[in-house]
Image: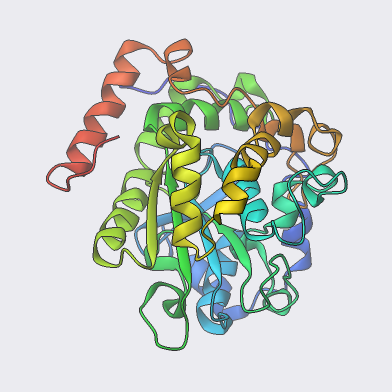
Amino acid sequence: MEPKTSKPLQLSPTLFKQLDEEIVYSQDFMDLLSTLPKEKNSFGADIFRYNGFWFPKVPLHGIIESGKHFQPRQNDVFLVTAPKSGTTWLKAIIYTLLNREIHHPQDPYHPLLSQTPHQLVPFHELLKRSEYESVSNSSDRSSRIFGTHMPTVSLPKSVIEDSESFNCKIVYLCRDIKDTFVSFFHFVNKHVDPSSNSLENFFDLYSRGVTGGGPVWDQIMGYWKESLERPNKVLFMRYEDMKSKPHFHLRRLALFLGKAFSEEEENSGMLDQIISLCSFDNMRNLEVNKSGTTKLGIKNHTFYRSGQVGDWKNCLTAEMAGNLDQITQEKFRGSGLSL
């Protein structure tokens, strides 16, 4: 597909600005940036290709710093997704699951009622090295919960590799590429001038992988392979499966994280209570998620759109859907994975 010509993207004046201004970049990092392939991403910001994947400046700096300085705790948990693949939803679920002993899901003062999932579960690549140890979001002092859009090659080696000292767990959630694409397109257009970001231009960038943590297909394949090689370390989940069988996959997630539900919890309706608290409709209607912005300048309400499986049918042309399916089939051929 030939992308249509459009005027330059109009970047939100506050997006990424605060974090960028807070970081003191070393000369070595700036020298590295000058050697990397660079394009403009869908937000109109510079994005750089590093180790086969694309990253904006701030998260790329965080990735490199993390690789040098991050020290995991014994039971750290990393929730990994491509952007707009159910990140916010699963952050809420994992936080509630791991903290259910101290924050019952029916607690009228539950943290999710006053803080967003992104406040409770920070993105690892957006943390400064001085902030690693201050993350305290699990009832187990030996663990922290981090979200990330990093591919396997960008995770700290101490997290992804087997170790006798660390038992880090990685939960990877993927989604139908077409729904991910559509959700991301609408998300971006809440933060840029929509007239400058046509569906065709966005499709060109996305299909070439020029998006944070992309190409999305390569990111998915990396975690799929790790889940086959290290099933005790990496749990591979599909958004559509979570939506269709939430109780089954909540049990599966709890078992993987070493927090299986007791018979008493099962009988008391604990699973239903977690699913209800973290449901899309409930989260979207909470005041904390309807107003305010993240430290990146992203409006909190834009993390909640429809959450529906198959929503791509309302947006994509048959040609675009076919092209994305073709790329997916080619990338996943012979892997045993299908989306």
